[in-house]
Image 1 (cartoon, helix red, strand yellow):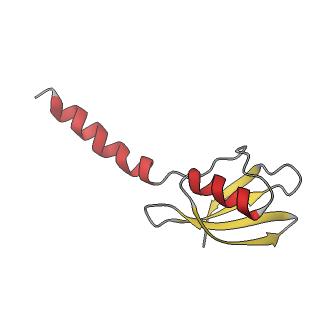
Image 2 (image 1 turned 90 degrees about the horizontal axis):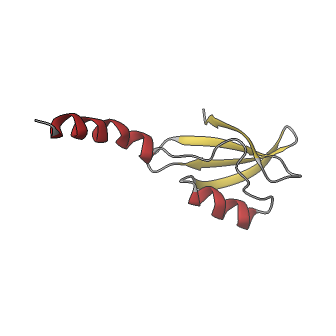
Amino acid sequence: MKYIPLLALALGLAPLAAGATPAVGDHVGTNPTDATAALEKAGCMVSEFEAEGGKIEAKCADSAGARWEVYIDPKSGDVTKVSVDD
């Protein structure tokens, strides 16, 4: 009976692990090769980059299929915002 709460906890946390994304403040770099590698290491497969509002916007998807927009400061290479792609 002790194992049921542990199993429930593990199953409850599984979606959080599958939906990992980069976080604000992560350094991913400014060139596409470095940024793609860093974002994919963080669990977000990049489909494209574009300039938006003075930032670099990376569009990517996590392993659960959720789509994300990751905004990168073009001077520092740091992630400044992560939002759901609509």
